[in-house]
Length: 432
Image 1: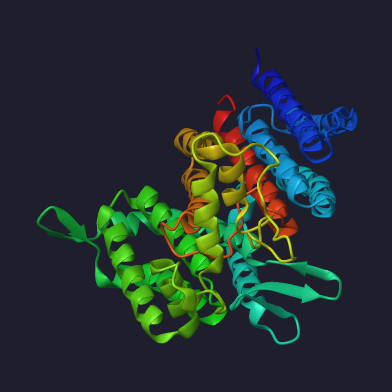
Image 2: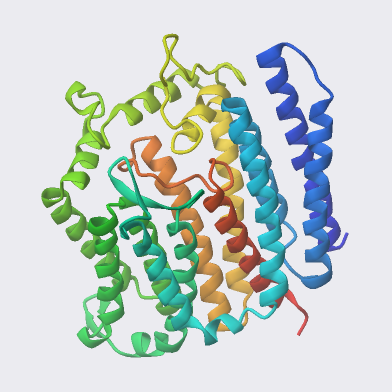
């Protein structure tokens, strides 16, 4: 069976999952088995087949599993959001359609991934501008103490979602040119090769950018995501673990310093260390969210309480599980589907990351290799940051769960990321 036929066949289980999910929601909420779920499944399959045809005729050699895996996550997210709030699910469905359009436009307009190298400084400047937009007076929006969103009239979005792609493109292009300098120079101290001070400039610059994000927009998740992706790219480019060790030490030192001096970061750390302290519940960025998240996951157990059975709202009004459609959607999944369902979801994410790494291995040129590795790393880190925050592995931040959480910015940016991975994959797998 050809790669494109495997991709087409992989879209069928995703549409069946959407159909079964909506049917389960109707049964749980209204005790009615409606044939509307079949209509939703058919529409979803039709949209995905349209995107598949774009891939089939423009990227015939691309990885056949990336798009079906992303479609599986998207349909699962639509069902979960509909179970939480039907109106939000309709909005998410609209963003899904727009995301597929942007996905197709990226493939048709870029075509040759090496074109991005020529505009790396323009792309980097655009990425930095996007990161700073939330602090611009009049359009910046503050959420739970962090500056994450931008609101211009009726339009609101999170620019960090698109900035992550721009930064990865720039770093892949920059490290392609400088990797030889970083590899050839260095001083051996025992089993470790230390880079010369003059070549630590890029590492220090990106570390400074991560610390700026931590202080200026107060977003621990984005700073960790960007710096972690940079370290992954440096390691792929140089095969020197010393760079990673120095980077981790720098980030830990900077994080400790700002956690001791910046109030918002300190609140996040305190809420993470002791989420059940009553004094921390009502603070901005307090511990109520993470405490309720832990209770919900514990209540789910191994197999969950049942789809649609999670209690999200208090009887007298108010939310038992705050931001269930965005930050804490993973907690809802664990509560209703248990540890088994959550592990299944994480396995889909791991498969996407594995396909990105395989694409990086197969790529013939350094830029494509670094770009695929960087996109896979930033995608994996985004999942780690939100799942780690919800499960109290790291402090909770406002990063979304890719393709599953509610949010137009997130689904659009991740469709662009997916399109770039497919472009790299087609170039890598194309017969010489």
